[in-house]
Image (cartoon, rainbow, N blue to C red; front, side, top):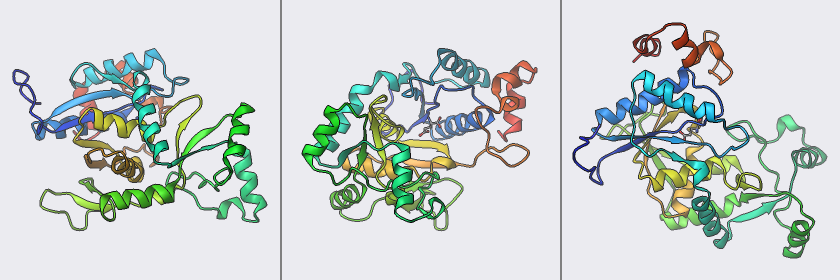
Length: 309
Ligand code: GLU
């Protein structure tokens, strides 16, 4: 870590670990936190922790406490104060407002059932409909082309809606702003055919694979994609270290960075820790939970050994 006695200079790299406190941490989280922490140390950089607690319904105070206890037990330390996304809704609203002013957002009133019905009534079986990289159905565009009076009357009726990004328009505008195709710098274990001198590969983005993504909902007035993009910029994160499961999502984050004039961090998407059957660990995987391992009498060194640190 940077020498605590001297204030960090603006070119000190800043790494982060950003767990969601909606369950107990498991070995996969330990691997992710340690990867970020050790890469920060190797780069003489700083390390911060961020609580990604926008999902107020699933966040629990005991999970927040559990994260602090587990990470301390592993031997990590981080700068205070710890940012909590639930305290940053005004920053997300400001970004949404800017995107709305660029005419890139539209309210979408569709329920999941309506989406499925629209697809199947169009004669295409669900298993043939395009899926996004996370396996979700690409949004079929209902409510996208409706008139302003139609929109107003649905809002007056009190219909719940989400704000979706008009992806084709957003991508075209972002590429115009960027002066050409957009990419990001990746140093993770995949997609490394021709690493450049800093050991990063240039990865072109294809956010259109996600279709018109949701950037905010009525109950949670932001989304993972928007909050993570704003936070990384607000906090000055230079190096995003996280699991490979979020590799594709980076395309959306880069798109938003260009649209909102935010700097581009470097990325490192690490391998995922799997259980004996080859499955990714889930928050429900109790036997791999850090608390459980601790209670079984394992030491932090044992845990590090288990995941190759
Ligand atoms: N909060 C996310 C998670 O726990 C990680 C987000 C990120 O690192 O970008 O899966």
